[in-house]
Image (cartoon, rainbow, N blue to C red):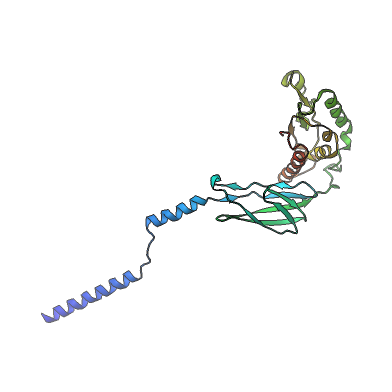
Amino acid sequence: MKKIHIVFLYVLCLAICFTMISCSNEVPRASSSTKAQTQSVTDKHGTVSIRDVVAWIDGPASDFYPVFSIPENAEALTYTYDTEGLLIDGEAQTVKALKAGEYTVTVTSEHLETAFRVTAQKVNHSEKDLYGRLIFSAAEYDAQASSCLAQWNEYGTDGKTTVFIGDSFFDTVFWNNFYSTSYRGKDALCLGISATTTQDWESWITSGWMSQITPKNIVMHVGTNNVYDNGETVSECVASLQRMFLIMHQRFPNVPI
């Protein structure tokens, strides 16, 4: 009988030892309240993101737009980048290209962090289109450009007249009921020139007939011929549009476009 008791006590001791060892090896688990607290801290700050940007040497500064997932928790941002290649104005949210290349900009705040890329390019003014014509030369449209300026001088008024400009979609040769039906009796002029590209309009806005007028509003359709005549890819066409609109907004800072 004593042997049975001894064996029973021995087995009981082993069971207790194994239980203690098993408990000592367990990793404490976070309570549900701890998880909720950690998650609420992350949700409280949210995130910030900035889309990649193209900027041009000897051109106007490009805009960038920080987007906070929780706008009311927006924080002051600090930008770290290669100062030999870029110049960033954090207050104005613009980036100026100083040297061609690809750059990564690191963005930090008290609680947030992100990064975006800047492609710095130099405009090639000697580039030609698919037909061997200089892309940045609008000389072949001199007659139409002179006609547009003459129409403005006769019928347009600075600060009052809305202009429709761009390619064939806004050329009265194709939009032939603009004055008789679409905008009859309105203070609006249709001054588009068929087959033109963003580069043509860049030149007119910078130093051509568009630099001599100040419309109330500008409505534009352009970019089709950048693809068909210049042979630009989608990303190249988007960059061309961006550059032209930067120049346009610089020339017409108070005009809705």
